[in-house]
Length: 440
Image 1 (tube, one colour):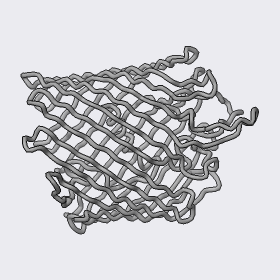
Image 2 (cartoon, helix red, strand yellow):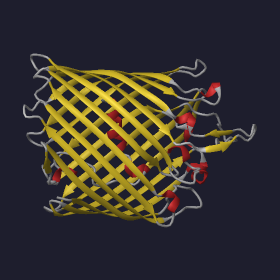
Image 3 (cartoon, one colour):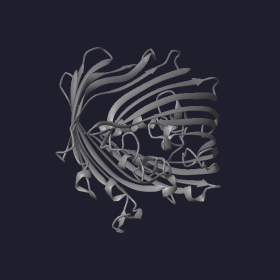
């Protein structure tokens, strides 16, 4: 569903905003799909354990303009995947668990432990009807200097922690001709943060800075696919997203809203000759706030991903772009800084992202990946543009697949942020050596 699509597109911006996991990129030719991980059969299920390890150096841990902190770091990530298919083939089940421990040796306050649990169940009722269920629980951290602590990392003693609960269901109906199908989906995302206490400078009241970020997002939507060629489908989709914030300190800061979107486009998959696959959609977005004093926002939006293999099994070029509306997360810093040319608080972000990726298999066991990505965040308020940030990232990775179960990686990431608010500007260099092991 749309939540998942946004996550995939955001994943391509990892070199811009955080440490990238160079292994998590499965597709038919490159990435994790190259590995043949050994599974353990237990009671009709297949259990696949993995271990990933990174050792690296971060030149600007808190993404600060001044008083930068550099540190060597170690990231350890064990994970388990459990899959199963019923004897009649109608039920397809998957359960995933991953634990990530990140240790910053010169900046212990930035160390963290993350937990991710997800599952899915696909039920193929018959050739015309399908049901899919998804669930996910995340107990993660936002590194200091990102999201709410952008430019003000020293306001935090530790990474900003949050939890997410996500559930979704999708129903697919295939018409008898199989030239068209309808997908209907619904989902709920509950996003809440650990408390960060502060004292109001006027009233001396102790309050939770993070409380105003907690929110629940519900989405309902539908897609219609119609085959217009041997490998191409016309796509028409619409959705309604309802964002409800749990708490607002001041009445005029209420950000709850309803967002309606409509897109039309095409999806294609020319795999026989290995030429291209992808999708392109363009549409309209309208965001109406519950608070009448906040102006509605109307926006042209798009979502494009194109994969091209000029030489099958040797090169893969991927171009991605999207424009979408995002929540402000308190406009991105703990203490609002006034006195600038435009110091009004924003109530939404108009985000545009572009990414180009080139993967190449040099030898049977040696491959590389190069990613260039840039995004532009335009913060909007009632008087127009409040602030503009431009994030740019470059990621270069070299892989050596020693065995089917053992792979090494060496990567370099450069990220840079320009902003109309001077104190948010920064750049960062990151080097990492990684190991991926299938235990059995």
